Image (cartoon, one colour):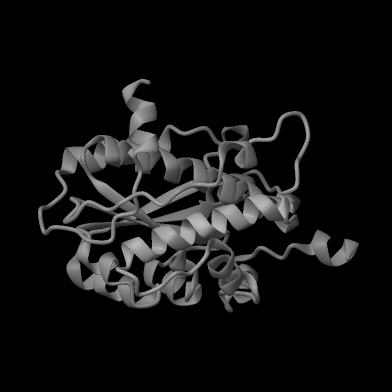
Length: 251
């Protein structure tokens, strides 16, 4: 197995960071790696905003729901789906981008961000740094947009903490590969496989928490998905110009 694949398979979410600064050449390498990921139609529908100052990281720690590691990590990146550049190009040519009223634009933007984010994680961890993505950047997106002065057609999708790990964290077991991978056609998850995985995760959780909790994978998943988790997403999309008109028209 080569070093790139080994780095990817060694990933752990890091939530405890030392105060050792991230060298600027490391950060630049991470940003270049993120930028060089593929994007749909070479549209490069991603922007990354670098948050370095301690007071700014403390603000974002609050905005994402009181996650202290956002303030602790010396670098916090905000990954945005960005169609502002496309809109500027269209305006210069007297064109209107009707595609931005299509919900597929959101899928394109989120996909491109995911690719760039994954590249950044692999690059950072190959340099001995720890990372953890922060979906909580969407918890208060209107304040995030105001703070970062995001123009129309730009929305925050994920944050990313980067820094030197303060501790070694155990990996969480993944679903079996034959559940993740489907050969030729989709195979629904069986209750037997689900029960076995829930038991595995429950035991792992018990070990990691010293017996404080034995939450299963199913229980945790359901607790997030029982109802819409972030309440300002629709308001964010409307404010930033993503009308998703085709969903309303076809619905």
